[in-house]
Amino acid sequence: MRIVLHGVRGSTPAPGADFLRVGGSTSCLGVAPMGSAAPTLLLDAGTGLSSVSRSLAGAPFVGDILLTHLHWDHVQGLPFFRAGDRDDAAVRLMLPAQCEASPDRPGSAAELLGRSMSPPHFPIGPDGLRGDWTFDAIAEGSFVAGGCTVTAVEVPHKGGRTFGYRVEADGASLAYLPDHHPAIDPGPGLELARDVDALCHGAMFADSERAIAHAYGHATLGETHRLAQEAGVGRLVLIHHAPSRTDDEIDALARQIPADDPPVSVGREGDVVLG
Image 1 (tube, rainbow, N blue to C red):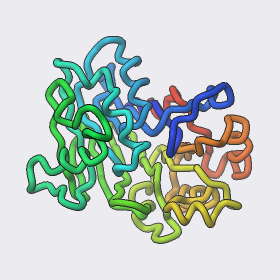
Image 2: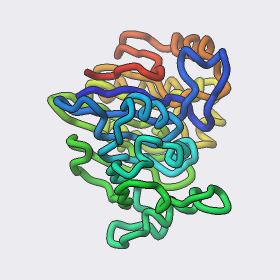
Image 3: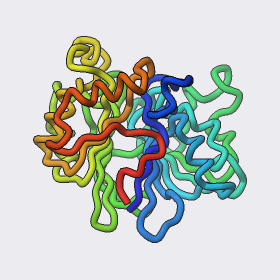
């Protein structure tokens, strides 16, 4: 299983020279199981989807997209996903069931997504994307997506239902928790991250920013590190970086935690997390 970071910023994209080394695109991670040259599973659909299109070198995307939640930085790349918005693309998009979107209501997932992606907010709705697109509202549990075994668990985060994901294939495992408030309840995050090879976790806030982190439903860096230690992860990868934090500031923030218990790295666009 090969896992590549395509977008590692939170909230908004971060353009400019001070953000080039880490990257300025919002949340997106690509997964390619062994034997697949291209990603078949995408986690979140921020502006990092543009990087996915470039990596496919003119080929369509054929696979699944899992959204952790519906905040803008996790969906704003969808209308601009060139590899998915074409006649020969085939995409199944899954989002956490909530509000009127439920697994037993066909079309309800697209309706919910369309609240932010439709006129007058955007020229087209989800049904305007070309290719074979399906939209599903999913419940917690385990299922197969993109050729991988995925476990979805609801995690604490403010402003709509949010899932964290555990992805397993080819004897490797990853936990993906970009937006997560473990101080409310560490249990779901620990369940997903227990003994994974790599944990990709949000690292938007320093410990000194605890009040604002918790107000927005996020973890501080120290809380993220403690979760990784308690879960016994093989490696902690810091993602969902603050858009106002420069590359140098992100590196300085990461140096505030031990680099080897577990091994810690700053997630950057293009990094291969596993594989």
